[in-house]
Image (cartoon, rainbow, N blue to C red):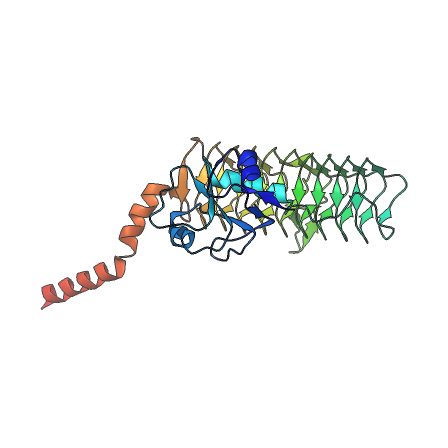
Length: 342
């Protein structure tokens, strides 16, 4: 697919500086470039590459002021990262599951309901009573359990498991080896010191336009539903416990863990490796720094926290400024003690 700078500028609502007829066929990183590619400058730390890149077209912000000549044709846009998201979607990099056809090597139960324009890859299993909406793309070696449902235009990548009874909304993306609806971690201690498994009879409900990263696991509810609200984005390797609720448009980075029955509000931003104790509520708009340990509810919206146990973000870094000096302060205190003794 060849696209000219003029056509791309129209598509991205930008303006061209340079040759409007130069064509590109794929995106590239600014430091790698290559003839026939389009790259972007979104972070000022990479500005030096703007003057050396071999990309044919470079996306820059409207406010970018070149300090030296730039050989690439520029497309100026209001929001570089927003334009890149549109660009990658246009090139179709997020769809790698093939044309709308059902492989002869797929095992689709005759009682499953499969919509129009669906692709199902080889060695994928779709169980009885499952519903696959129009335009879904299910890659090879995926599993859609009994009574599970997929909304229209949802993408399921290789090895993902949608366990029985779970519901996925429209326009969702479930990445490779994610498991939706595994049993929650529930065991009743017995008098003899053993544990009896608590059967989880609930499910997982994922609303529209949610993206779930590779190897992320979302446990089914003990009763009722574990719920991921519309527009939420979960990174790779996240653990979501039973009966958790994650609010609309909340984003969670890799390796975070959320214990059972915790309710996270909408539009929260949670850093990697953050951990949440169970049965607490997190207010809308909360910002949780990476590696934070959250053990108390957050009741005030739009608050930023950090640390383990997590406290107010600014208070944490003030405390850290003191904490890292403790060895030096201790040494000085010890010296003063020795002088007083002497």
